[in-house]
Length: 135
Length: 135
Image (cartoon, rainbow over all chains, first blue to last red; front, side, top):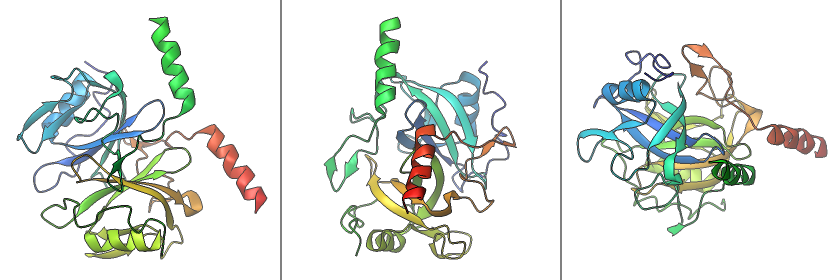
């Protein structure tokens, strides 16, 4: 059972007509927005129970344990909801540092049709190097 | 005419059944996610033309020039779209440093029902003080 279990009043969230709420995943270290996907009440509950991000895949119409296939799991550090309870924001630790199915770090890599890496915080990059060496 | 005018291929964005796309506003200095709202093609085009954030108000069913009433305008520094072209991410300069209608800095201030300010980057706070003193 994760420490997040009661972080969100799951039944008070305002899901849309499809029963979904947008969920933003942000790197817990440098604040880069990595992706936005959708959760239904079941995926939100599984996220809170396991401490890993579960979404609802609109294309496959099924629960989506992010990274279950690729290994790029998302460990959720915090989760909050907005002032009108219809959007979620998570800070996450992105395993493999790749959130996008294209292999890019962030899904938001497109500016004017070209691929540009989102800005990353130099201090966080140094931290990652140090943390990797401690293992 | 703003420098963003061609930043997004507005007609290639995948709007939902209501003609809307979610738009995330992130502080351009410290990366705090301030809010998520919705844009239709017209509000996106006005955002690109003016360099200020325009949304679509789902409750009022009208174009919403953020800050037109409160003064809390959002100057858009960059805008990008995600890998499947159905979400937008803007880095913005939040005039007044208040994005939420509740008076909080960020709309995402709720954790476990209590109000907690999102983390802010100390260096960015110092930068703001210095920048203010230069004016």
